[in-house]
Image (tube, rainbow, N blue to C red; front, side, top):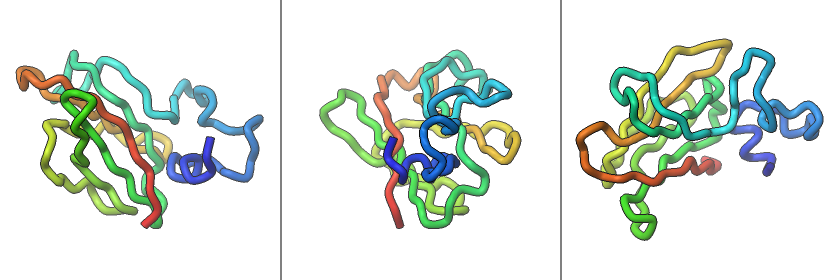
Length: 130
């Protein structure tokens, strides 16, 4: 995994793969990599989402972007979070970011399409340096 991604997701890029928490679930069963699941958040309950489990606060020199598409052809940046700032909406998509509880210095976010929107949403997390 690229060092930038390890750093942005809260792992130590210098630790090596044998002690990298991103490659497996942590001791408390937390998955540090973005993954697909059915949301239990009241805003997106029962909807397929991408779950992010990010360090809180995140690194100040990293920008996280949610990139989405209704058809896997036309992609747009929906939201950006730079450093310790909150998520900022850029428009262009119908994704919803539903925050979860902070646990053990990490913040959980479910990213998906609200029920009844009628829009299929494909999405990924992009990590860039500020």
